[in-house]
Amino acid sequence: MNADPALRAQDISPGEREIESRAEKALDLLAVARKAIGGVVFGQEAVVEEALVTLLSGGHALFVGAPGLAKTLLVETLGRVLGLHANRVQFTPDLMPTDILGSEVLEEGADHRRAFRFIKGPIFAQLLMADEINRASPRTQSALLQAMQEYHVTIAGERYDLPRPFHVLATQNPLEQEGTYPLPEAQLDRFLMQIDVPYPAREAEKRILIETTGRARPAPQQVIDADGLMDIQALVRLMPVGASVVDGILDLVRAARPGEGDPVLTQHIAWGPGPRAAQSLMLACRARALAQGRLAPGKADVLALAGPVLKHRMALTYSARADGETIDAVIERLKQRFA
Image (tube, rainbow, N blue to C red; front, side, top):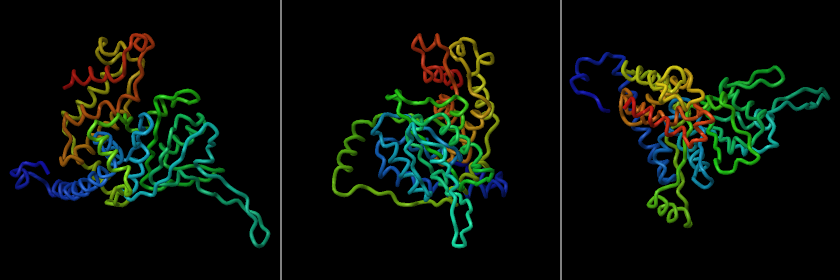
């Protein structure tokens, strides 16, 4: 861990020492986990890091990328390495809420008495992959996204709690928008991050060609289990955050809101991120610091995660879109101001 030896000797309280000890153990596990994931998913180091940060923060992620960029493989690999019970749902226009949540069926027992029995849907998993989530109807999307926020479903007046931990990793194809149902802004806010998945670099793609077209394909090994992941998630919330980092998060998020930030920067923004964005950025910065072997986040974490945390919580004005402006460019200018 990156810590001053003098501080270790005299200025660290017993509570801080316990946090540091737990963090060192977590760091060892996370290093092995990242190596296991990297042995299966090639050339997407930034995407893997952001996905891990999302899970360590206890949140959900939306992966946006063209077909064939290993989004499904990454989710499957994360489930195996982290020891989570995983399910996958392919979203289609005819998918109904009950296809995800579950439904009650009427059964007749040996005594000829009839009773309803609840059959759980695929949402009752610790890691749910919602493949091409924007292809489902708004009603089905809403059922899933409500469960993501409340961590339970209600069927026929009965409440059924979802497993813990519970994470949704959804995918979205940005190329084919015909016949899709874009997620409403209020529902996009349920995702801690939007993770853009780029094409791999040449060397990474070369490795993909060599290692995935032979007889044996690499298989990930379990490194952590569900209880271990929840322990790390609890540790993330115990990590201290300096006042300068807190102020930096607030300044960055509030500067992205029309009427609060610099008019020159916000003239292109129709609506900006709310308090949940600041909460998400705070948790994500803590998780990134832990994953990189630090006990507390710094300004670099805020700047590195500003894009994935904010981009799906903002919208441009019509005139800005007509002029070719992009959310990414606006966020970059906001980051430059606070760098």
